[in-house]
Amino acid sequence: MADELMLEIVSPEKMVFSGKIEEVTIPGTEGEFGVLRGHEAFLSSVDIGELNFLKEGKKTYYAVNTGYAEVTANKVTILIETAERSDHIDKERALKAKDNAESRLGQMTKEDVEYEIMRGALARAIARISVAEKNIY
Amino acid sequence: MASLKDIKRKVTGVKKTKQITRAMNMVAASKFKSAQMKMENFRPYAGKFMDVLNSLALRVETMSHPLLAVRDPRRIRVICMTSDRGLCGGFNTNLIKATERFMKEKVKDGKEVALINVGRKGRDYFRKKANVLAQKVDVLSKFDMTLAVSIADEVIVPFVKEEYDELYLIYNQFRNVSVQKPTVVRLFPLPSIGQDADVDPDRFLDYAYEPSEEALLQKLLPMYVHVLVYRALLETSAGENGARMAAMDNATSNCEELISSLTLKMNKARQAAITAELMDIVGGTEALAKG
Image (cartoon, rainbow over all chains, first blue to last red; front, side):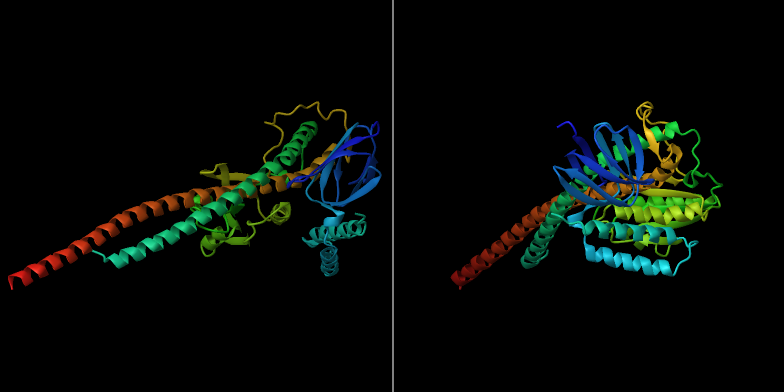
């Protein structure tokens, strides 16, 4: 098919996904962006958030952690430290992590060393929860 | 000479030991296999990551990042990465010795040295012998990138805040199943990137960058630390199980040797007992015939 795009999601543990897709939406550092076939070549860092792609009319969701995405006209390579598919996420745990992070953050000031780390944990938990809710398998 | 019964008991004992060492050898072999697979799976990630990092580093004129800051190395931190479990030959002993030697040298130079332990064996050894800052134990049997991230984050923050000046990572470099080499690498300040790399500088020429090259590089550097730590963890885990495999293989063949020498002894003792009994009977009948 003409509008197909090769997508590779690579994490340190394994090749998370490799295959032809129609469209992918990536949580970039400067905002979310979508990629279709024929996109200009570019390199972007990826932040904590929600990644999804469209394959044969069906959307698959992943909660991802920091990494980067390399885009060429017909191929997207995403290197990511963690990527969890929506049906593999333990929502209860994510909710607990969110509560924990929120209460810890409440006791800290912005100058605390752990502030940034906890904020990251909170963002990850929120991304996981929102992805888990999109379970459409 | 030990009695027949004693030797018999010993043989059974050694046989049981042999069973255990053989089982441990097999367990280590299967763990080694999965550790090796983990290393294999990590390769594409590490390869692609280094590609991008190196070509970015070539394109950015001057890199300035807190993790690259070179200061007078007065305060030094050392990460010692051992295994959690023993019975793996000289794997931990060699590493601990190397760490101790390294720290002694630094102390002699008048530096302030603090230690971070990863793995139970290192913790147990250094508990009272060194200035231990932090430790992570019982983590190596099952780990993923999050462990590397948590180790890295714990050292990145204080380095950026200039609480110390240099960080070294000491771990067993994995050569092959029977060879692991204690290795010292400097993590912080990060050695310059891209100089010795074999990359095609044109590869990313036509790319648009988001954010800018510099900002992107800033973001990739902490990830680079994660990659380095994760690789060391993988090599430690593969090396540990490889070393245990070799050690248990040795132990099993030693058991076999012991069993065969003990069996020989046992047979001799049995023969001696039979001979003695025969002598008794013969002596008895002769005495009866005379009488």
